[in-house]
Amino acid sequence: MILARVIGNAWSTVQHRCYEGKSVMVVQAVDTDGRTPNGPEFLAVDSVQAGPGDLVLVAREGNAARQVLGREDDPFHAVILGVVDEVDADGRVTPGNAWTAGEGG
Amino acid sequence: MELAKVIGRVVCTVKDESLEGVRLLLIQPQTAAGEPQGPPEIAADALQAGPGDIVSWVTGREAAMALPRKFAPVDCAVTSIVDHAWRDRSLLDGEGSR
Image 1 (tube, rainbow over the protein chains, first blue to last red):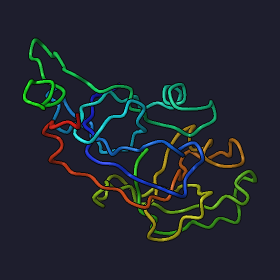
Image 2 (spheres, chains in turn blue, green):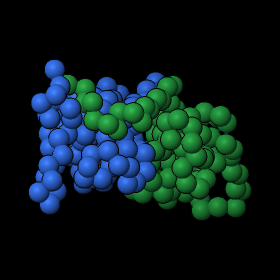
Image 3 (spheres, rainbow over the protein chains, first blue to last red):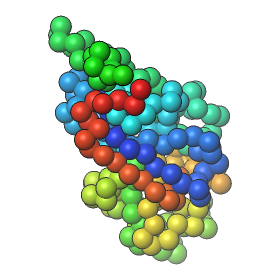
């Protein structure tokens, strides 16, 4: 699994039936500082009501996605599994969002 | 799963028989802002995407699942025709949506 930041989303009407009712977020893989891109921009299906700007936990593997999102023959690939409150890397604690750092509303 | 723009088609008459009737599109992977991201791919398409369409696509085993005929021997397939996609890189600064 990786850390990623939700930076947008994508809507489709003509799609594989398994995506109906699901929201597809545009995510950017980021480093443990929560903001430095360290991989591609890609799409992940949300399962935890993540919103734009959230630091999230993403699994990029079909089986994990299917367990969370659907049936065993649905072409899910990447899934947002959680909204990250904070990352503690080598004692350096990075808040997931401004709101977890106490600045948010 | 990523975004891509449909930039063409690929036609093969001599091919593995299980690819019979499978539409093959030439797609250019790109970001939600339209920046190319990686080399062009050839994706199987069951949604009738056309040239210029923005699509989402998957690779690996999921590609075989995206087609009506289960387990056609493909490793890249279109999963949707995208009506609208946006991204805002300033969101990397961690404002959060809560």
